[in-house]
Length: 169
Image (cartoon, rainbow, N blue to C red):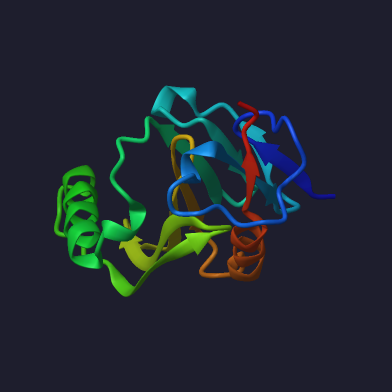
């Protein structure tokens, strides 16, 4: 059975019209959590919502204040080095992201980016996808598959289920 998660309670049904570039700040987002994931507390890591599977794969949502910068202004050249540096600091040895795929676009008219890559940490290959969206806040969804890729279709369905919902004014 799928769960529906929302970072803030929608006050109305999803709008059939897409957001325009000027009004993306009126939207929050809902998404479908794949079967096999259970909500856990991620507050200690600054995570708004966190879901784990028995195999250790993770879905996280982080919300921060929207500072007005657009997701579509980001580039892979901005994101990849900072991620590699963070992993390198955590692991104590050089870490390189592989199979990097980056794109910008929109979700229901709200500016977004997607970054996917594989990384090997302590001999374990992780497949990770990050989706950033501008709305009433800056939303960052991260999907981490520790199984070697078996969650790929479920994670894609979860990304495809992300829907903008207009916030009541």
